[in-house]
Length: 196
Image 1 (cartoon, rainbow, N blue to C red):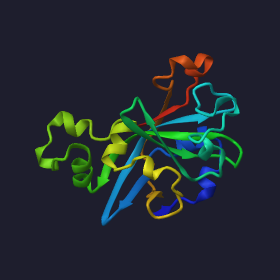
Image 2: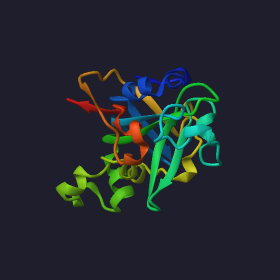
Image 3: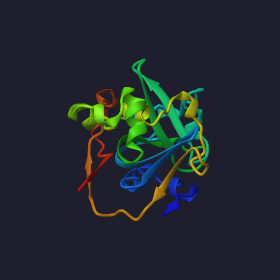
Image 4: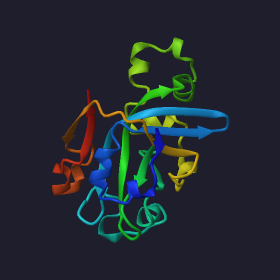
C-alpha cells in the first residue's frame, strides 16, 4: 500500500483516467477516515475536447486550477445541486482533468451513509445502498466534498489516493455521459469503468 505521488497525475488524462480504476480514494476530515475504491472515471482534455470547461483556452476563476500543476483537486458545482470531484492532470499550462464518477465503499461505510442520507447503514434500503456513491454528485455527498475542497493537493493528507495492489478487474471504455452538446467529442471513448 502506498500513496500516489505527483508524477502519477503528470500524464495524459486518458492514461490517468484508466489507471485510477481500482485505486483507493482516501478522504480525511475532522477525526473521520473514509476509503473507497474508484470504479468509474472520465477524461477531459481542453485542447481537443469541446466537453472540457477549459476548451478554447478559457481561463476563468473556475477553470484556473486545471491550467495549473497536476495532482490537485478541481471541484465544481453543477445543475445548482451537485459537486463534482476531478483530478488535474498533465503539466502546468495544459488544461486537462479526470472526473471521478463512481466509488465503492471500502473503509467506514457508516460515515458515508451518514453524510449522504443522515442515516446509519442498517437503516438504508437496498436502493439507497446501491445509490450511495455511484455517481459524481453522490460520491461527493458521501465523502463530504464541496467547493471548500477545490484546489487540494493530492499529495497531502486530506484527499489522496493509495494503491493497494488491486488489479483483478477488466476495463471497459465507453462514451462519456451528458455531453451531447460537445459535437464530435461526445463520441470519444474517454469513460472508463471497472468490470469484475
